[in-house]
Figure (spheres, rainbow, N blue to C red):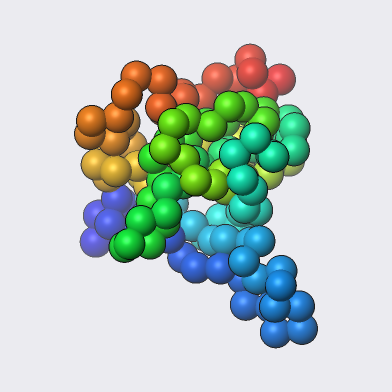
Length: 132
């Protein structure tokens, strides 16, 4: 199994006591196989977290699909086509850089590059100045 075959959607939180919360939290696996917990928001409703990786997600008949990713502040404008923003918050800049690099494997072509046919500006590179 290659690094990019490990990257995938890993489901939502199983919350038996509070089932209404289950859909709020999603899990994704990065290219390393590490599992990342994310909070799900509608575009434009994301809190202004300073150190966060944002996955811009489009819901498809095959399930959720990451169409773009950014690192830094979580309240950036979502790209066209994103139905949701899944946000993974970290504590340190080093963790932010690692998570951004690892979660890039979720992008369409499996190489961590822009999805094929994506308009310019849909994939935001890691920018430590934005996160500082």
